[in-house]
Each structure stands twice: as C-alpha cells, then as structure tokens.
Length: 137
Image 1 (cartoon, rainbow, N blue to C red):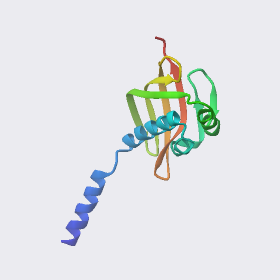
Image 2 (spheres, helix red, strand yellow):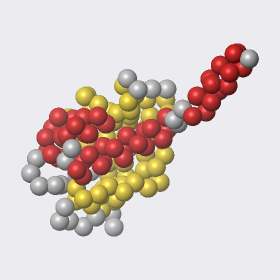
Image 3 (cartoon, rainbow, N blue to C red):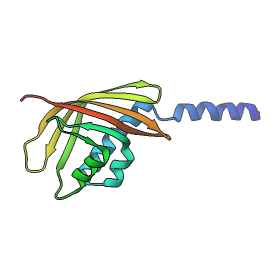
Image 4 (cartoon, rainbow, N blue to C red):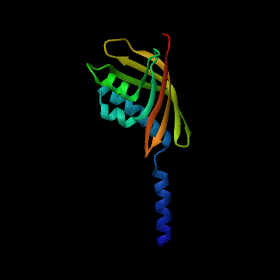
C-alpha cells in the first residue's frame, strides 16, 4: 500500500509540474511588466546577468544598462502586448518568437517581431538575449 501511495504521489507531482514553455512565457510577461512598472528588482529576476539586449532601432545594451535606462526618469513604457508567441525548448534553454505591440509613453503603439533567448538559472527562466525588428504599418 505504501508503494502505491508513493507511486501515486510521484505521478501526480509530475502531472502538476509546470510546463517549461509556460514558465518561459511567464518570464517574458514578467520582465515586460517590470519594465512598465520601472521595477529594477523584477527586471533583475527575469533578465540574465549576461543579457545582450538589442532594441528595434539597433541600440544594444547590457542588463545593467537596460535596467538603468528603464528605471530612471518618467515611465518609458505603457504596455507590451504579445501575440503569436511560440516557444521552442532546448533542454535548459528556450527560444521565444512572436510579435509585440509596444506602447511607449506619449507615443503611438508600434509592432515588433521579437526573438528572445531564455536560459534556466537555478529553476528561474531568465532572458539571455533579445532582438526585435520594428515592422512597418
């Protein structure tokens, strides 16, 4: 009986374990929410220490440069809205692709095609690389 209970517990635990692709999507939503809120702690949680971030306009930043830029002065972003998101897992790495409608403070929204690379660090998915291309209207 004890073996059956243990086996049931292991199977139930495996079934309840979060899908890694969903955890990657959660990390993508986490860093964008933190950027809107100018939350440096949240950004550090979802961005890898060695992040390379390439903006749609071509500017590149490290994690610390991005965080310093986003959290200083008035809010830069109003919202990020993801669509057509696909996540491809490669063991402890994942590639997220999709579209993002970006609304910056005081500007019209614009759409980008994004490619983001995530790595799992101590059970936490973090963005390690970001590249986006602004799309025409």
